[in-house]
Every structure is written in structure tokens, then in C-alpha cells.
Length: 237
Image 1 (cartoon, rainbow, N blue to C red):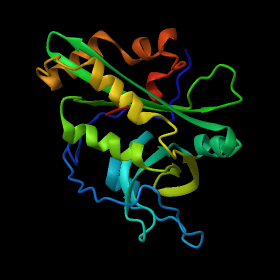
Image 2 (image 1 turned 180 degrees about the vertical axis):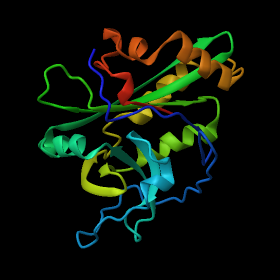
Image 3 (image 1 turned 60 degrees about the horizontal axis):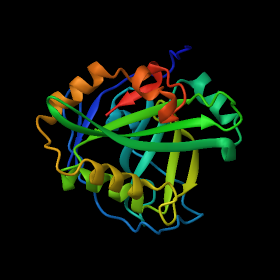
Image 4 (image 1 turned 120 degrees about the horizontal axis):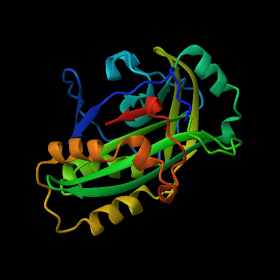
């Protein structure tokens, strides 16, 4: 399996409205915005320094950011790579740059762990190998953690920022009206099927999950239909 040296791993953990990035901690207060908004054409999207959100890591991230002051804070997808990588992505027709997602959960002796996977791929690539991908773990028994994903599901549009360092090179918008990505449906499935399963020690359950199911092995299974995810392109939350 080919891997990329351009996008590297990172590990983060989300709790309530607080994003904890390892190493160190950072608190983000998430403000509500109108999920059915339309950005003014006259507004050029602006973002904070990506270094201030995720450090100098590369990969695919989902972070709160203000890209239109009149709308307020939104959950934004950031795809950061080095210049040659992003230039290659910019050469892809935006309509062919596909954003996909799925969700699931696992149990082990330490308890229950749920996860959501996002990946970006070129529709013309017959191998369906993702350009970049991200997996985030969450506790389905904690409403405060589930609300983060409900908020993303409620958004009528998802925005993908292509980044080189702290510089935005392009923005690609995806229609999520009426939950087109079915994120609510997938969350409901995870919660429903894991109902009654004790949470246990979530942190230990997550670590054991990663030990028992290496990302390349677990995500690459044909049954998951996730394609081939080079581990160096993964961002683990």
C-alpha cells in the first residue's frame, strides 16, 4: 500500500464543547449559527490561523471557525497539505472532489467506543483511494458529545478549506440540506444499536480499539466500503 509523506497523523479527543489536542489543551466555546444560512457573495471567507487550531499538523480536520461574521461560528473541514499536495488537489475539478463519511461503534473489555470517519477522494480515481481521511471517537451515551455531530448534521452546507500552512487556497462547498449526508441517521443508528451497552472507561476502550484494530486493517475492510486509507493520511480524534 502506498502512503503519503505529505499528510501526517495527529491525535485529538473531543469532550462537550471542548477540544483537547495532544500535547497541551485548548478550550473552544462553540456559538450557535443559523444552519440554513447562505453566505453573502460579497464576503470573502476569513479564518483564524490554522496553527492556532491544530498546531502545525497536516491532514483533514473539523474545527469551529468564523468564516462570515454575519453568520457566526460554524464547523469547518480543513484539508491541509504541503504545497505540491494541495496544488495537485487544486487541479481536480471541484465537482469531482468527493466528501464521504460513515459511522460505527465497537465494544471491548473496557467498554464502548463510537467513531465517525470522513474522507475526501477524487471521483475519477477508480481505486477510490482517499486523498485524506479523519476518524473521530465519541461516547454515544454522552449527549454533550453527540451534540457536536448533531450540529454538523444540522448545517445546510459543509465547507472544505484547502490549506497550505495558514493560507487558504480554495473553498469547496457541499450541499447538506435536509441532512443529505445522513449524518443524523448514522448517529441514530449508532445510538440505537449501542443502547444499553455500558460506556465503561472510554479512554481505555478507545486505546484498546486502536491496538486491536489498526486503522489500516479496520477501515480497509471491504465490508466497510471505506477504500484504502494510507495510515499517514489519517487524523485520529
